[in-house]
Amino acid sequence: MLPPDLFENRTFNIASLVMAMTFMGLMGASVFFPLFFQLVMGTSPAESGVMTVAMMVGLVASSMFNGRVLSRSGKYKMVQVAGLAVAVLAFAVLAWAMATSRGYWIIEPAIFFLGTGLGLVMPNMTIAVQNALPLARRGVGTAMLAFFRSLGGLLGVTASGAMLAHQLHQHGVETVSALGAHAAVQTVEVYRHAIASVFGAGAVLLVSGLVFLLFLPELPLEGHPAMVKDDQ
Image 1 (cartoon, helix red, strand yellow):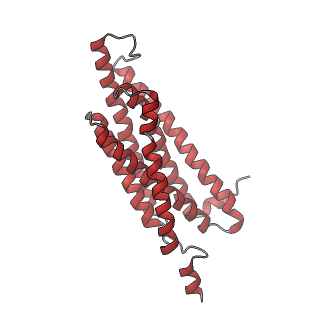
Image 2 (tube, one colour):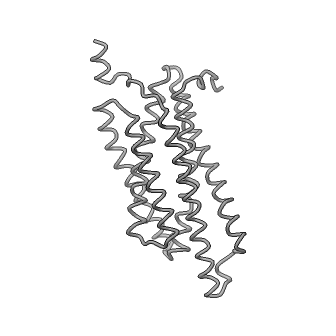
Image 3 (tube, helix red, strand yellow):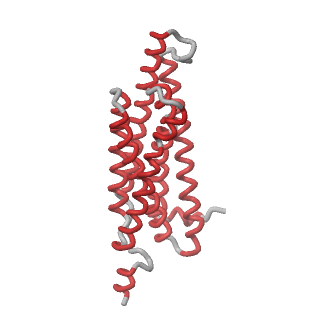
């Protein structure tokens, strides 16, 4: 059973909303990375998988950096704001690069910084929720935060898929393999701009998450040396 008093906590409510909005934009757009790399840029399936590794590298590296900053300062909000701002900028660059046929030298760094920004947001949000809830509610609060994150991703994938399908249907595009060379080129361009528009919509969702994040309360971290010193 989900305790109703969980939703009386402002930090939990804002954190859940931010994570839902962030992953709605992230998952809704990034699920089309393989399609873009293979169909539009002409890479193989193996190569398209390798090209998305940059996001995970950025996420892991920023998470490690974030842990050091948090342990020293005890502050989590400004790092999250900076991280989500970086993710928004990376999403916007990806949408622009896809729409204007830019090469790997722009797309790959943007993917890396997208992961970097997310690595500064996700761990800190979990810490913020756990720190704001009483001990008896921390387990269910953490689980619900993960649930809202997954729910946002699910809604994002569904909405972006519908958005992409609608644009392709408007242009009468169904398949590429059955088309002639000239028609295939035109179809690839339709896919290019359709996927770019999905990333643009994802950037808007991340901006919404960033706005909500500004209202997240920053509470002193329980057990942090600075807090213990103040209590003494």
